[in-house]
Image (cartoon, rainbow over all chains, first blue to last red; front, side, top):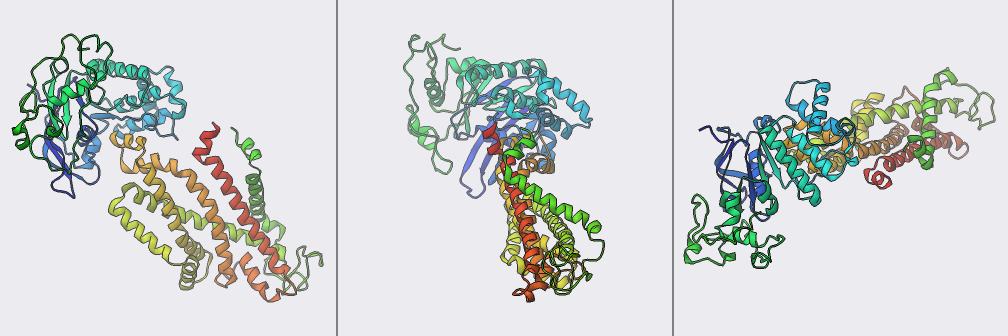
Length: 328
Length: 278
């Protein structure tokens, strides 16, 4: 079997000035070619940091403490900025959350997208421009030649996000990391952007690492879901399985806190919240990090941090299925 | 919004541009209007403006034409003002851009050096440089550039600190763009408005400082400048005040013109104001 497209193995990232503080505590994720993996979790769980690590863009003050990231079987030199620069944009593209601020206000759309192509490939400006117009058409923008001549402030949020996606795809990467790609957009536009990503994935065969806290989005588009909590993966499963029978108490909590139409009629309990907050990285906590917020915690949870066993990292995985037939 | 219409709405900037154009015109036509050397004696000394036909703005204590001095002096003022600021801009933008973009120890080192220059009073530093290297136009330009660049560096650094965390800069980084490309092609154009506005103010400051140097006798002795004229007219202050008043007014109007243009450009280029209008 060929190596997976991206393989993160036991990635550990900590704060340089504090040897005890670890933000990523052994994250392992695998993405195959052409698949969509969703990473979900509350703010501060390390979702975005995981993706930044893949790009070799650890924020100042953080350091990699261990683990490997392999891309097509070869170890990514994530601490070597020059080597990573040839991978960023060309092999791995990335889309951020804020489309309103994601484009440089002083340049035309065409110039900005062309700049990415010119950075990586030895093509003439005219050729790059021609490709830009193709790309803009590809991401579903009407009258791409015209839009290439516009400045960003003339575009709507959804149009800008399409441009940002076009930029991320300009050099035909194999992997697209989408960090909350639709959070800042109107609901109707959100759906359009996600549909666009799915189409592009189908046509171009790119893999997508989707980082989000929108579980509705996950249910629609992801092949597999990894749930992260306090710098660790606590559960991973195929999307349908995870929604039908979440095993980790945290996953169950997330799902119970997700509004969905028809939920009351289906006989589900009303929305519940997970008590407490994600523990801070400097908080010294023995055993399972979710224990203080968990309704199922026993004595063992206070002493032993549960290992990830194929599906879930929990001493007391829940096996009762949620009400069947409500998986969207 | 056309440039001409914006100018009409902003009459102070239009006034500044007219004054500045007049100074440039004087500098360009000095040779044709006053073919001789401005140091030449053209008539009796201490003629008040209008008193002697050969010198419209009067003559100084040695019978030199004050109008000729004003025309030739404008050349020096503009040359020194714009060249020194050009040099200061290049140094200041480079230092500020790298300090602001990279942060960390690069920022620490560059900013400490910048502060070192700022702790010495500007004018004192300029005098020291001229005193050590000898008075010539080139040295004066260098000395004024040396005292002007720290302000540019700090301004540019501040802009870069803000701009480097914009989402589009992050976008360029994840697109694998090189640092230099990001600094000069992505961030610098966004910082350009404030830099341009500051440069006009700095030119005014540099012109005033050049005059002050000349007044104190640190100017290039081979060229006549407004500061030299004021310095030489000093002794006649009580009986012939026009000798220093006329170059003084020329200085004042030039500095005022540059400030008006700078303020007008600020209104035109400031992205926040521009967006409000759009």
